[in-house]
Length: 116
Image 1: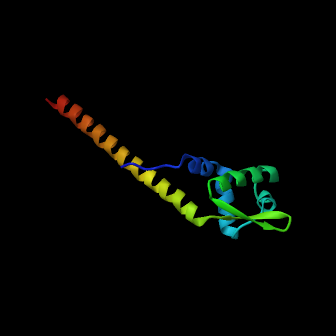
Image 2: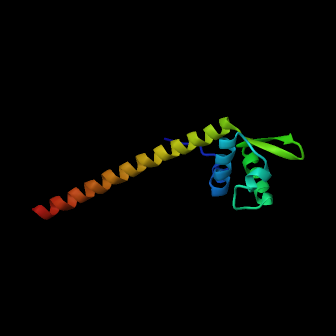
């Protein structure tokens, strides 16, 4: 099974602050860099940089809101990221099952060799 992985997308969601930002944006229906920085352990400037990364991979989009920009999660792009994660997870599960079967066969072979 071949899974096409978007490395930039995975890199963007690989950061725990950005994942928390996505959680907050989803829970609140959107937000600004200021509202996010009030709820995260980083500065507003750091939040703005993280939002830029999320925006470049299409996970958030922004619209003007007074003197700031309001960010919302692009749910279609988020669904794409989740689908990739699930697909890669399934591929690794299958690999680990094959490794387990090989290890069990080796163990049975060794046990059978000691019985004789």
